[in-house]
Image (cartoon, rainbow, N blue to C red; front, side, top):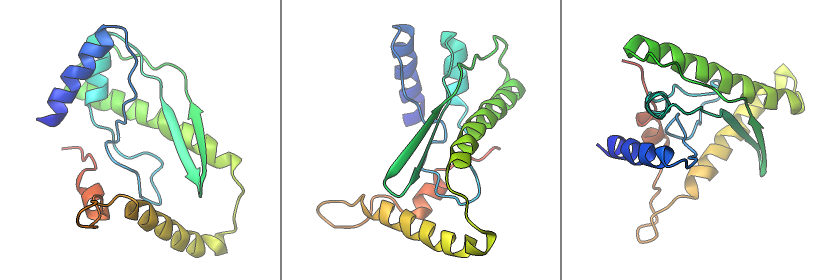
Length: 156
């Protein structure tokens, strides 16, 4: 129900000419092999309803350094049915993954033999990132890998 209400509010803002930053993956991408997680369909439906474009953006970090790559406006077709939404989501996700890949191409390249060490460092980074989000009263983590994985969109 929260997503539905959020989408209705977002549509109201968009109809007023406002811009919104929407994260269609829905959660942090903590995977080591997917540039972009599957997208929730709401962003496509909202853009179609309001007849506005989506500006795909990729963000990646390396330690404390963040990199951003902004793509060209992405327009949703007028005809939207369940099959079209799937196709358009895939097209948008591909564009976002390409933007992410372009960021990665600017980063220093490692050797294949160093990949295991990279995975260990990435794991530590994910853990330290999640550790930053704690309830003040209990000290327990707000976000866990299990919670992030549960909130990842899965195509039905």
